[in-house]
Amino acid sequence: MPRGGKREGAGRPKGTPNKVTQDMRELVRQSLDAVGGIEWLQKLASEEPRAYAQLVAKIIPAEIKATIDASPEMLASLEAGRKRASDRAKPES
Image 1: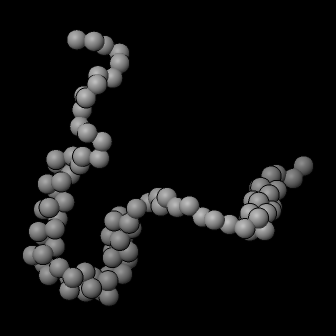
Image 2: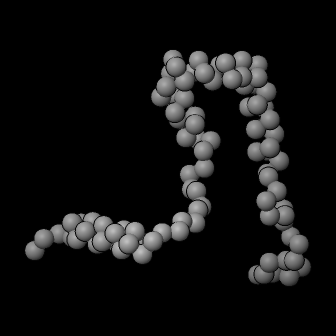
């Protein structure tokens, strides 16, 4: 058996979910249905907003990839803001 390098075709194909994760997600879906589904989530949001916000934060992706088209003026303004923030962060001598 070769050592040290990646074997062609080894491992799970990219994007294939882990079986345990898949099973766990299905159990969570079933438990949500058992406690009332949407109605339960709405009740949670109104009675326990902090818990609801934490739940939502776990579900929403932490990173969003986007392409933004900006005018040269907008880019210059952003760069000037970065420079001011950087200048403020530097300790004064």
